[in-house]
Image (spheres, rainbow, N blue to C red):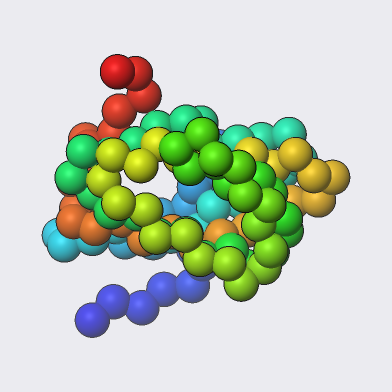
Length: 112
């Protein structure tokens, strides 16, 4: 068993971007916070499934070139090979929970 508070973990980019809570051995996940104008960057995974649960904000989610306007409470379950990006094109911060399974930290592609 492991217990911690979100405040004890760090964002990848100072005060925004991904903040991992769990990294292995079976899955990884945490929260994403993007300020206005920030984005995840288009990528996909060959083996990993990824799920996003949006808590706050209305960013644009792009999956396989199709754009979706997110509402709080939306869940996107992505299969391997689904190209995806999250773009905060709004004037407010966004926050989402992400879960990636199985734990394959090097399974990320950005160019075909």
